[in-house]
Image 1 (cartoon, rainbow, N blue to C red):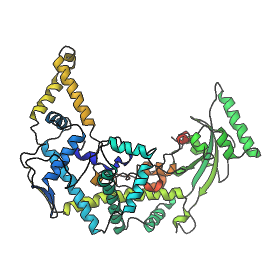
Image 2: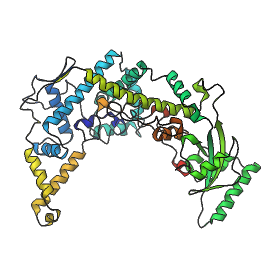
Image 3: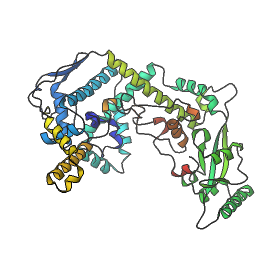
Image 4: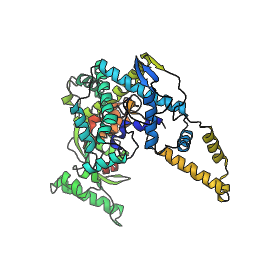
Length: 469
């Protein structure tokens, strides 16, 4: 767990669930003490990071996590494999990244406008049931709306814009790049089939034979025109997620359908429906092929020729590639920077002697568990150890804001309604995305700030798993 992890900007969706700092920067007021003064902790391309800034950062972290006493602080550092020196190193590195992002933003003429902040705040608040719920989450995190914007939202937006600017400069983004990617993967899209299904499962003590007969009767009704396929799906399908969409489960190349379903769909042309119900482990499927995509003669010359789900997949792939490239770019930018980290001064308030706490931890670990029932001291030690672990757990999830969640503009985003396929493709690297969908963090924790913006922020419909593995 990183000490600076509580700065992670992905807290946009978990603002009430993790501990966030109250303020950042050289102007932050904290519990500074002797040893900091006007000393310079580090220099980044001639720009100073003051020792007092680092000290205030640590003081705020301790206050937010109930680690004000030396005992609590020492226990926390030992349980999380820190020393005062490594704490200082990590906080300095956080500020180095912040300064480098700001310097790079100036080079690429990138700025965060008020309109960007307003839009992002509206998206954030929409994740909560009400304005009151959002404010309660902020309060629980020890923040105000202003500090949330300055310590989380603005840095994330800056990183997003910078990554976009870098990608644009490298020719990695835009419709031209997307079209080139579509042309390169067009054969994987060719022959793709979109389908809908009606899933029937046994009711009560209904036998398999009776269930199959009931499914066949529904097929006959649809063929006779007594009921439309869409209405039959809405009224009868046990796959509730797709039933709401007339049975639609999307494109086969963007989903993992069970073998029986895939085989049943393979023989269908556009508009065809299976003559008999198809049995799988989920029940009996009535399958209809609703569309078939074929690459136009002469190839793909415009994104408009592709179904919107395919375009969303390509956008996800583009974001993933750009995010990974941004990680590489930033590391190279960091390596070229002139960075000087000065020795740690004496007398810093957080630089306590942790040897007693190491010995305490070793003693507690060495105490046989069975002895605790007869040794009250051992019980107390165990309780303390458990309390320390709990205290450590208060520190938030890994990643820091300077590197946070760059893969896209906002939110761990799964595919939009009717586009479950796109999300599956970006995560699984299915046919359309090939092997290109693998994605790591951009600049430390970029996952799609969070996630694949192009595909939206809605999880796939609940019941679609009935047709998928």
